[in-house]
Length: 229
Image 1 (cartoon, rainbow, N blue to C red):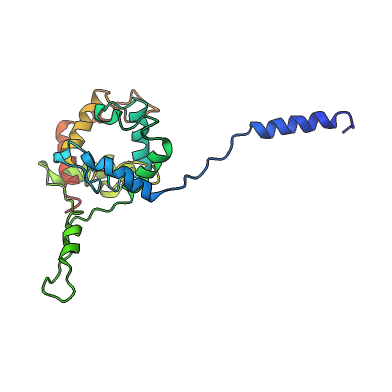
Image 2 (tube, helix red, strand yellow; image 1 turned 135 degrees about the vertical axis):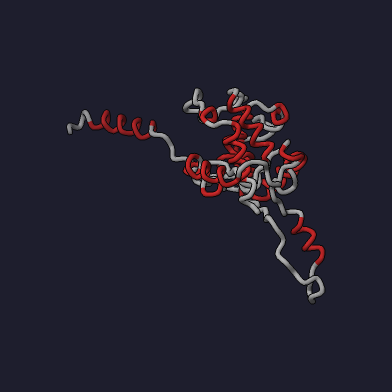
């Protein structure tokens, strides 16, 4: 390399390095901020993300953080329609860092399905602690349908994405279906079938749920409603 061409090649190298994308920065999770944001979310979704009104407000607790974050972004960008969410998810009201905090906060909430047996007459029994623990109990009522048929269909068609027994996949940000209100699941079926909600953004014309009859979905939801028994 000649002395004359060295500066030119060096400058080219610098420009090349500067043009490379920077590595994604790890989010510095702030659980206190997540808890504070959840105080607003609790008005509809419950203090522990348990949802309510028989599925009018879905359960968010234990859902994969990546899935919750994706949905918040879709609401913010008006790609998933929900008028009740609009005022809460704009950039000023809920910036990206806040979205990440609340998504992780909700994903780490565990809702038990039953209280362990205790002897209330035993020394050291804490009635108040028992009361607080009872508030985090959630069990979906059994839905009508053929549970065994639903189990077979689910295992054949659904568990590769939504996980064994419908508990989702945190690494792949696939939502849990078990432990979710059956009425809410039916509402999503309607929205997915009418394209009000897109199942796969990379394949917006996908008609996945059209492959299932209403009876098959009824049986699947009947099975899923028993998983948390």
